[in-house]
Length: 96
Image (cartoon, rainbow, N blue to C red; front, side):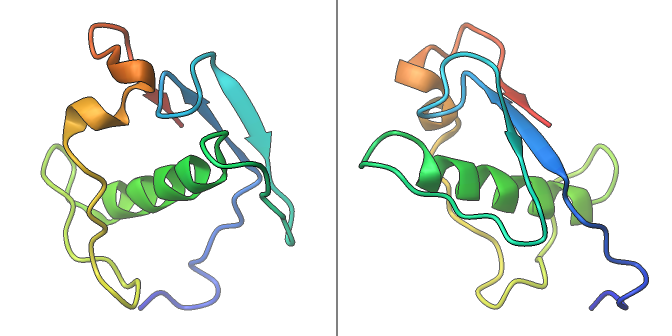
């Protein structure tokens, strides 16, 4: 588990061609951020992208993600082709 001084505040992230986010979209974050919307418009996709980033950050460079310190461990996000907006897997995926 990370100490409080090792934690970083996420100030925002960008998604493109990821699930509900076709165009590259920047999502700003603050200490309290609310995500809401109708089904299939992005709140769950945004949260899954954050969890994917978290798992990747904890993994070794160039390797696969290791077990995270999230209560339920690694998150099943579906097959890689399911990550892409409208299954456009030929287009670049952007999460950052």
